[in-house]
Image 1: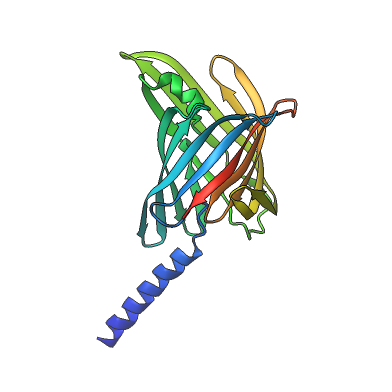
Image 2: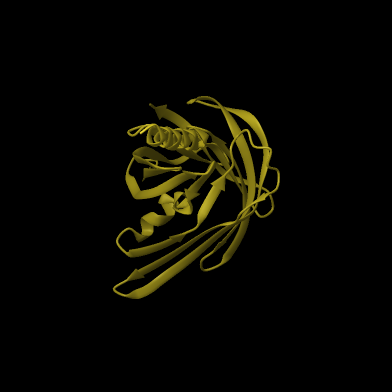
Length: 229
């Protein structure tokens, strides 16, 4: 009996440690809500996305989060609803690349059949000493209607690097963030090259994102504007 109790104690200790080692870049409590507002390079609002943590499931060393994202235009009209997942396993936090779906773009295909093939998108811990390159992220979108293929889009996020850890302040507060930089290649009818810089805070998610053209010119940015716990 004592041996069984000891083994059970070790099991629960291991599980608790694995969960404690998980540092997710999403809120931890079901029902948490947050808002990200997008702006043009000239600081004009272009839309917003409301997020909600719909579910959190913990099994052994894994924590899985299900997030719902609802996009709105500048007239507060709903444009797109997206659901994606995020996972924390063995100390690594990974988003589903479906988080990168642009509501403004996807609005045009809301009455069509859309198939999304999304890879993983890793965000290392804020206290990481890792300075090398992160794995690429890919997002492939196929759109069809009545069985006929309309368009396909391919997004590749590559040359991903951790730049540094720094504080970022928005109307939602001040956050300790890991800053990532990366290149982006989008291919639909034409191929477009660009880059982005993103700030992520543990327990929150993306606090700020800046998009740049292939020539390095700012084209727009998004900011965390509210958080409700």
